[in-house]
Amino acid sequence: MTIDLHTHSTASDGTDRPAELVAKAAAANLSVVAITDHDTTAGWDEALGALPPGLTLVTGAEFSCAYDEPDGTRISLHLLGYLFDPDHDGLRAERARLRVSRLGRGRAIVDNMIADGVPVTWNRVVEIARGGAVGRPHIARVLVENSVVASVDEAFAALLSSRSKYYVPKADSDVFKAIGLVRDAGGIAVFAHPLARRRGAVVGEDVIADMAQAGLQGIEVDHPDHAPDDRARLAVLAGELGLIGTGSSDYHGTNKTIDLGTCTTSRAAYEQLRSLETARQPVTR
Ligand SMILES: [Zn+2]
Ligand SMILES: [Zn+2]
Picture 1 (tube, rainbow, N blue to C red):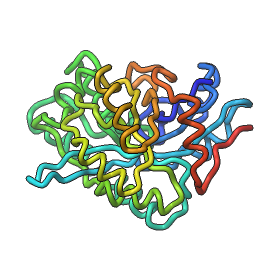
Picture 2 (tube, rainbow, N blue to C red; picture 1 turned 90 degrees about the vertical axis):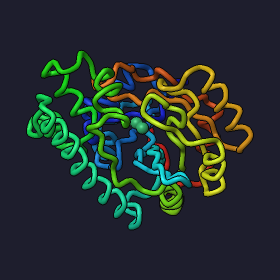
Picture 3 (tube, rainbow, N blue to C red; picture 1 turned 120 degrees about the horizontal axis):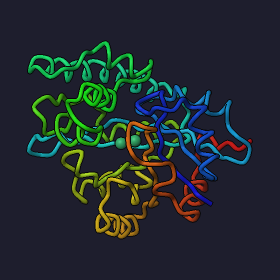
Picture 4 (cartoon, rainbow, N blue to C red; picture 1 turned 180 degrees about the vertical axis):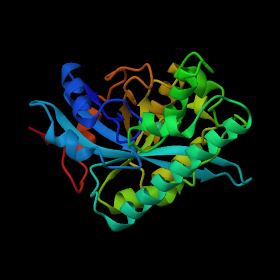
């Protein structure tokens, strides 16, 4: 049973249409796949409509959040919400706010690059996003197209990293507020890639403990951006805090070089998630 609980489609910054995503998940012999686009549920209907027989779809989203350190430093982090009610008012309003902020922020990053003479245009970024929520991977692809960098990975490590001079933070949700909204909407709250240090600063274990207190139910342990010792530590931490440890590829199609099912969730962890009370149920045709 191969379970991958974190993937992106063209509804955000993946390159596969939701229908293609579920077809590829079936072709990759996954038993369960979750669609978790950034700040949107726009891909759910198409994925459900195209669901191949035998594949189980877990509907979800990945919320852009922030944690403010006592010294004022802001750390951005991602929260996965699964099986929540997409019509919950508070959650829907927050998703709309984040989508608008993403657009303005992508534009601001591109403007910073243009002002510095980097060959990139906003029109091309929007074209590549194909109507989805604009994200840094779209900008990265234009930078590759224009030979500024050799790969999307290189773009993220340099020009698009949160340490880059072009970086503009998003108006993200406070992570504790986001956990509350996901739970209120009948969803499961899982902290995505807690130790993905390549993307920027990460929060300490004390913050993860506070998040658990606030209603967090799981953390991603196995993720392509986690080093082996980080995975080991997160597995221990999950046990200490009573959190469910998940694993996933964070697949983005050809925007990243990671295949579906690269990291996976154990059957036992999946059963634990399924035993929680949720507004929606996983769907199998
Ligand atoms: Zn993420
Ligand atoms: Zn993701």
